[in-house]
Length: 447
Image (cartoon, rainbow, N blue to C red):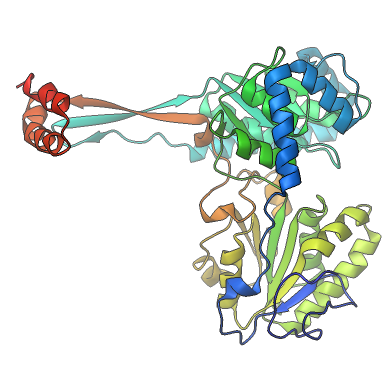
């Protein structure tokens, strides 16, 4: 287990050594009087190699279009394709090939996700003060690009989470990119999810090249106005580089993260499995346990070791835990939330009985799950709120994906004669102070 950051004292091992008997790397913040952020490991910025490769990919897509997409799909996905688009007939056929119980689950989940986002998007009220009326006009983008990851696992749930808020917002044209397997196919469950959600366009395309195609457009894929969806570091870096040429939701949806806050009431196996839920996505994620109960920390670590050994995704779990499986020991519940606010996790679980007071202290988190009956896995699939959440500490300024991310907000202004007379002197005075003569005259000509 690699050492992940500076410590003052470690409750389970000597300073700057790992806890060799378990899975997590332990950081003891108890009685630490310095700045907590200095004690905690920080997320790694995308390496220069990733940034350079993404730049090469995006420029190739810009200059070569479809030819670059076919070449990169062969290189990165091992799939030799003769076309990128998936027909509506193929989507409908997929719904007939999957287990009926899975199709039913997709339909139930989509209805709940759609209903939540429809409830969340309330129409702003018109502002009126008697002389001036400002009416908000919300207009959906013309085309939205959605990305659902592939590779290590399939994510039909991400298809639903991307598409539902776009449709609630009123977007007519939705393009969905999903990486193909080595045979060039997209799995049936993901295609069925696209059919259930009513996606108009599906493309067998993944990685940074998919983001570039959506942002820039090619012979096959028309460019979109906004791109949403989670992905690996290459996908996230492509969004970062192309932001400005295309709208990118404020949520930086990168590799998966979870912080679990636990105490003496927490069942260790529940904390362990909830850490594993996010860690099994792969090596770039983050799984942190924060507790003021040393015995719980030991028991959760032991449970992790046992459960990981039994998991079919043992390799992915161990890779994540090796890199960023952390336990932080703190003095109090308040300090636990303070650490979490610094980390600003994608998922925060308050796996304690008395969580109400802790909720009031939370400032930075993508989504918060309270108590024993609300694991983050419920939020991943069927609660309703979006599972596309800010990662990489962007929860400091960003929120989950919303229908609002697909809308442009335009204000429509109407002014009565009385309102014009009232505001004219103010506008003239300010325009004169800025030396803008035409602004002044635009008022005076109307007086």
